[in-house]
Amino acid sequence: MTYTEINTEITNETNLIPIQADLSLLEQPKKLSTGDIKTLDEIAEFNPRFFVRRRIFLTDTMHFNIYCIEPGQSNPLHKHSGSDEILYFVQGSGDVIVGDEIAAIEAGACVHVPKDTGHEILNTGSDRMIVVLAQSPLPCLHEKVPNPPAEYRRVAAAKFSPEE
Image (tube, rainbow, N blue to C red; front, side, top):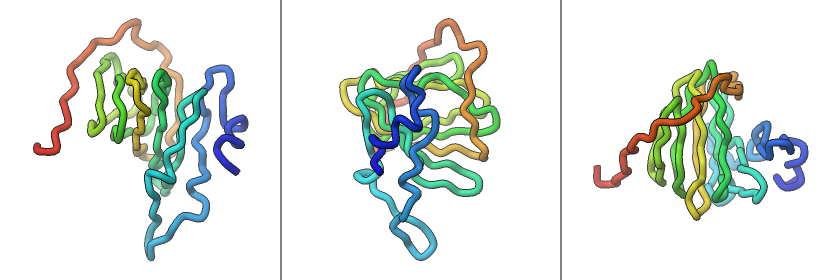
C-alpha cells in the first residue's frame, strides 16, 4: 500500500495535516547484522495537499522521522511536553518557529527544540523542503500550544558553512 492510499486514514482533513506518522518504512527494512539501512530516495515522499511525516526508525526511546514539505506548506505549531526534538534541514529553505522566535532556515541547519516549547516549520521557499528529525524520550505526544504568541520576534539564524 502506498502513502497515497493510506493518507485518508492518517490525515486530519479539516486541517490537512497528517495526524500520525506513516509507518510503512518500518516494514521489511534492509538489514545490517545489527541495524537497518534506508536511503533518502526511498524515504522522501511529497503530497500536494499537506506535508508528509514518515517514521524512518523507531526505538524504545526515540522516533527518527522525515518531514517532506512542499512550498507553501507547514508543520503547524505544536509542542511535545515530555520530549526534545532535533531538526536537521536537508534541503529547501523557509522559516522555523521555536517559542516566540522565528528564523530563516536553509539546508544544512540544525535546530534544537526543547521539550514543552511550541515550534513550527514553514516552507516559504520555492523548492521542496526535507527535514530529518529525532524526538526523545518516548512517548512523544503532539500537543496544541495553548497560548501561542500573537507575534514572533525575528532572529538571525547562523549560516551553515561546510568549512567551519
